[in-house]
Length: 107
Picture 1 (cartoon, rainbow, N blue to C red):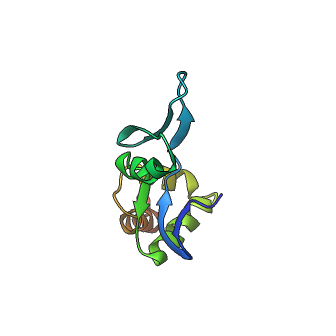
Picture 2: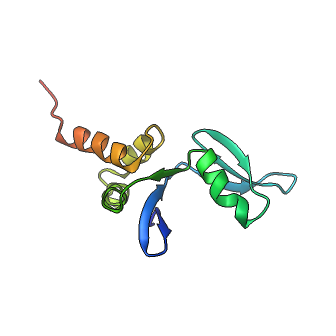
């Protein structure tokens, strides 16, 4: 699954894996992300709802591609998913994941 958010042909962000898109029992469409819940009444509401709920991490195209590789690698995907929920950008997520990858366990 490609998590990239595109603007034209340029990757500008990552849709974090923990985002829930759904419909309530009353038929209301909503987005639920790390910062809460937002209603979506039409397509124009989708982007503001994703941003308001912290469901998109923005970053340089290089950081987006790098974070996507962490999310698609079976060895790092679970940790990358968790990290995406607590950082504020693709660059920060990549920095945290690089630190984790280069760490060693002391005996």
